[in-house]
Image (tube, rainbow, N blue to C red; front, side, top):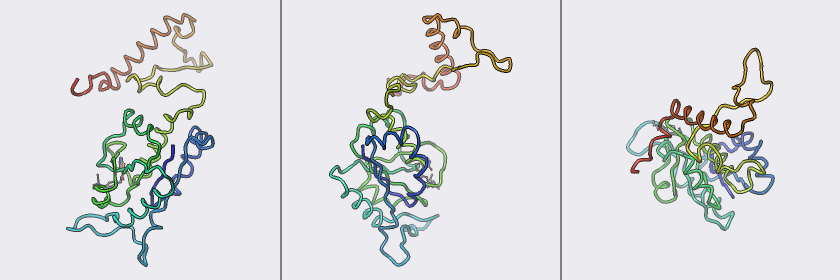
Length: 230
Ligand code: 9D3
């Protein structure tokens, strides 16, 4: 999968996406990441990427012309047009379902907003989907883009190597994980549930399932509710 990122802070992406599973996926050629500095597409003397909002109001708005040139250049680098995703507080919430949908795309073009927002004409004419990672205010779309890249990459076939497939994971069946323990079996007087040391596999599996249900009921009852509309 190819992912292009349009951002004013490409340097912010070094680090989080250069370690662990994402690094391995990139090294294996499963994930092809490209960053584009939006400011490179400003044309005026001050290299402006934003301006005051028409009609007044707080803050600055990212310019449609600058963003459109950045997008056109990014697009032209590969045959596949790519699905354009704007990270925005107005977007639909990033869920496991949306992550899986996005992971099926051959190419994503992620646009990171800064300032108060993006000129609506860019959204109307160029953006396919708007995505938010949750109801809290961040300073820009860069961290959400990294979250999206991390979550999506785990679903690219082969990215998890020989480890568990993402199908088997917690959110796939809608339950939280059971508690986990490893050696030492006693530390500081703190023990481990006896059942896990019993070697009785059928009972252990029953215990794990009961723990998962109980935790989900206690912490995330919303996950046990039927989805809206059925
Ligand atoms: C004053 C109104 N604010 C909108 C709720 C302005 C505003 C706040 C934060 C405009 C942009 C931002 C920067 N945030 C993002 O671009 C963003 C974001 C977020 O703040 N929270 C969760 N997901 C996302 S995705 C992009």
